[in-house]
Length: 259
Image (cartoon, rainbow, N blue to C red; front, side, top):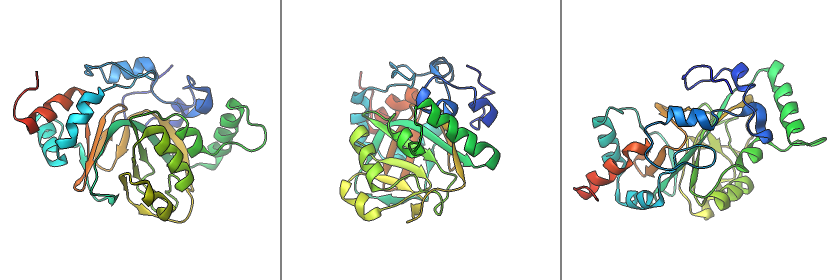
């Protein structure tokens, strides 16, 4: 595996070299060893793909924490850019808490798009009708994950999926999602009673975009999100908490250390 620098934007040439997951070989990002390196302050166990696996105990404790408090603690710890606002929030009366699984799209290029899709289909042994990109990505999610998706802030041509795929994602993760873009079929998604952060809604489909990264550093508005960051969302906005700071965030709410 070759990683071309630590920038949150990876070159497409570099992405073509990542091949640890045959399902989306040319779109893969950090491998297990790179996640160990670039999330080295994580004090917890890790998932199979190498992401920090903050224990459910701490996720449960975050249910009493506001994003205001969390953002304050992170600023004090030297992380001033972890909170993002300006969302269309579905079910703002709820909270969104889980582990980030990052997905990144970039503007398409005609000389690359056909090649990337062809190689993805061949890797998945799909001879005639390739599986849609969003469906391939959703098949990788697990319980407790929160898909954190950069579709470049688009509403038109920035949809991450519709009600059928979102329902499958909800079944897999038990969570909502964060998309710096949009989604469709609001009437079908609303009854799922899960919190969703998006930039808006649109009846169209995603266009002029290619999948460029899975579990890589990903930009969501003003925030750089790392795979395995803890997503905490409420009616104010969403904050992305580095794993090694989750306990400090919880202790600020409780007023004293838990151990």
